[in-house]
Amino acid sequence: MSIETVIEIVLAAVVLTLGVWTIVVPETFSATVGFVAYGLLVALIWVRLDAADVALTEAAIGGGLGGVLLLGAAARLRDADMMADARPGKLLRAGAAALSVLTAAVLAGVVLLLPDPAPTLAPAAVANAWATGLSNPVTNVLMAFRAMDTMLEKVVLLLAIIGVWSLAPDSAWGGRPGPRHQADPRGVLAFLARLLPPVGIVIGIYILWTGSDHPGGAFQGGAILASMWLLAIMAGLADTPLVSHRSVRFILVAGPGLFLLVGLAGLLFGAAFLSYPPALAKPLILGIEIAMTLTIAATLGLLLAGAPERSTEP
Amino acid sequence: MSLARDVMTIAAVSAGAFFFLAGTVGLLRFPDTLTRLHALTKADNLGLGLVVLGLLPQAASLRDGLKLVGIWLLGLLAGATVSQLIARAARHGQLNR
Amino acid sequence: MTEFLTVAVGFILAMLALGLLSILRGPGDADRVMATQLIGTGGIATLLLLGTAASIPAAIDVALTLALLATFTSIAFVKKGLSRFAADGTASTEDE
Image (cartoon, rainbow over all chains, first blue to last red; front, top):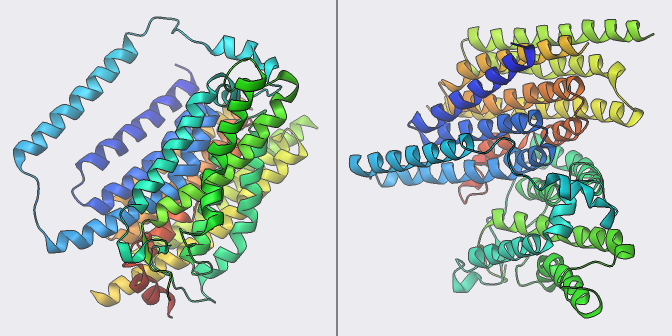
């Protein structure tokens, strides 16, 4: 048994133990912290499996926005726990456990029953990379070969934000989401919120830019930018925008909108919907990715900020 | 030249691993939140810093080397900020108890 | 060289696992939040060593992202996320 195998076993054992602990532990807060830690370790596994694109997404979402969202939810649940003490019944919990075990068993069975070698389109994706001029096969699949899926995904993000906003009371409609955060302007948090975002913005743009040839891309870059925005909001240095503001609405639809326009242009002037002319493929894809990065950053930030709750009048 | 680089890598990464060991022992042995925090920052700052120092001679390009140093600086900033925030939260929690 | 770096990865992973065991037991929430900080730092070191040992250049970018966002879980803990109860949380922890 080589050293690599031993390390893979150790890594898998740690992740599995942490997973089981997260399920078994009774307090919501502990389970949440365990889950965030679990996500960071899973990023290690993705790197070990040579899936750096996935690892980058896991790190950008799980390390930043996911943790903020989950810990915030846990804090709310804890406050709610004190008021209402209604634990689910034994039957319900046993049923949930049985369903979970069944799902895990089916998944394990499917993975174990895969033919060897597993069916794959990876060689085809790599062989056709010339068509776009980008050498990261994942970006090629997302932005060219399966561009329709990616475009619809961005529309789903838009639907999600509409869903969140629809929870706003009538009086707050068009106002600012979430509470106005306060922090000592000379405190640690405000200091960090002044120092980190310039660095983070550079890293976010770098991750977007490097995505054409190396692991990275619009989603990871956008998630990093959104985290930096949230940091400034949480430190009280910036306020959430009015959701009725025209520029907010414009940025939210910029990514899918540009994607759709380019797709329709392909239908009118080219071969098919979302077909890029080979000479223009790379600039078009980069243009769409830049617009999508802005949209993703704004959408993720606003999704975390929540429903509008402060009306337009101060 | 290659030998000198490898020796530096082995020395610095081993020292970094030692500080991770020290940090973990501290976490296992120390009694309360504030002292554990102290142990944790040893692993943060010195462990990561020495690992980065050890990997610098193996970096493929200048850009990779700069990224490595950047990672350590970000790690330092994170360690300093987080220990302040957690320590204040822990002290506040104790006062309220 | 590769063997040495791989052994170092295994050692730091083991330290990480031990540290997790001790921290996740608590007793306080602050101790548990330290777990994410520990995994952040140890994970970054592991990623860098693994990336060099297995020649995965993108591991550095993953580590860079983790290092950039390393503070977020702790900030969320102090601020109690973005919830409406946040204002009290900050006032109490920053007014000192």
